Length: 258
Image (cartoon, rainbow, N blue to C red):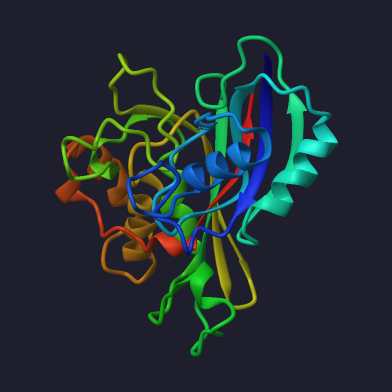
């Protein structure tokens, strides 16, 4: 039996997230079906994280084991033929013993994209938050800098207590570890024409954490809250202290480091 590592990219628009759900299209379920179609083996690929419905991935990582002896290039080619165009396998390789796409991950990077154009192109709309109020880049930057380092991110986790200990878009804690403490290594905004991009790298992310951060930063960027209020929001450890949840369609899983 061989342990496999896949890197895949997908458009999350047509899927109800990564995790398999009965009678609903999901990335994990679609990938498992394609693997079964090719090999006849029933496996459930484990992703580096459970992206929510509508969230996209530029480099999601999945791992699973197969009995069938298949050259990596052949498996990648066969999967891309079997999968819908919304999912592409970028690479397939035999993984070292003990590798797990989720538990072996050390850092993850996400990007969130906001369109500030007066008219958002329909070609871009499924992949951005079309934000019509002016957003001040310098204020966004000041707000984002406050979350660098290690903090309790309860205020930016899902408000549902049953979901709050799941990792956002990542689900990267061992089952027995339920903590809202995360370490953020990079948190910054940049602008390219009518597109504002927020990039964040961290040890892990609570459920909805990145989207809640972006929604709160946007409140600062429009002047509704001061950027220096972020430490106070963190200290509150209460979801109601933070801003709204940004739409899923603007979020991308960019990279997973091992």
